Image (cartoon, rainbow, N blue to C red; front, side, top):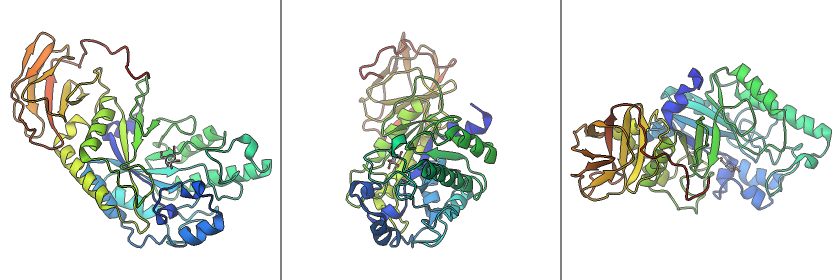
Amino acid sequence: MEHQHQWFKDSRYGMFIHWGAYSVAARGEWFANRERIPKAEYTDRYVDQFKAENYDPESWAQLAKEAGMKYAVLTTRHHDGFALWDTKTSDFNAAKMGPERDLVAPFVEAFRKVGLKVGLYYSPAAWYQEDYPGYFFRDWPDESDWKSPESRSRFIDYYRCQLAELMTNYGKIDYLWYDGCAPEDLQLSEVNEQMLQLQPDLLINLRNGEPGHVKICEQAIKAPKEDVMWEACMTLNGHWGYHGGDDCWKRPKEVIRMLCDTAAKGGNLLLNVGPKADGSLPDATIEILRESGRWLSVNGDAIYGSDRTPFSWVNWGKVTARGNKVYLNVLFSPGEELCYSEIKNRVLFAKYLSTGEPVEFEQVGERLFIRQLPVPLPDAIGITIELELDGKPEEILAQTSYWIPE
Ligand code: FHN
């Protein structure tokens, strides 16, 4: 890993923000495609009604900080093609329509101000852009769908110019987050090279070809076989964009379980929020991030900068590691006695991470016993025991087979 990207590993946890004209409809970010809405109707009913009147990115940044997140990625332009910044490539943007101001600059300033890293999401797909093959494709158009070679090259000029604007107009950008929906080879390698010239320390996800740095896994926590930077992006309910009817919220404990899972596998969790059209965040989002952030504020050592562990799964939570420390993140009480039988090393010391209080333990051969675990667990989300080992964590048995095929 290049040194300028060390922040990504140290962070392990970020905020994904899906926000745009589609938030007006309050039924997610794909409704225009699913309901075959023509551009004129989309503009009248959604873009022109998108006012962002309560937009306060400082409150988003404050919440991200309270949640224990270390970076954030904003959707600067989603599949609808409506840009949240003052692009010169088209008037279909927030500075010319709807809010009638650039919404990207305040986001970058607010998150930078509280010391978080800043990422910009960009969707190569642009349903309502005149040279884009069209907006009613079930998924993504392919090569044969271009209206003409001329419209294809105009689209490439448009998309390259927009990316250059984003990587030039807002100072230092830490992360370029492509969405994997490019029709086909849009000169991606040249574009990524160009972005790295504009932003030498830039981290680029691997959803739009090489050069890139971060493998993306969506709505699942599956580590790539090779030990590379990777990130799982997950929704907090069932939608990325704000959906007024979707109350299937994940509980704070599920957020921490996901975070321990990605950290144990040497990856990051990019957890999504979907602000309403006015810019305010749903109450449930705020509550869940604050409560999971409370756990992280006293157990962060188990997550930030974690290494990929050689360990498998346990029946009381998740095991993470960093250096010669192993963290038993007990999320599901096993009762007073916890037995852990994966560590080859000698355990030198054990303590509760949140209080620093020493924990009595006994190592009998391959089995580690902790016998006076509090019942119920004093924290509704769970408690973490830090083990100091006599060296780099080693597993007794390497995991070679998986119930769930890779
Ligand atoms: O279609 C998009 C979806 O709306 C959302 O933006 C996710 C986030 O990773 N990406 C696409 C689906 O893969």
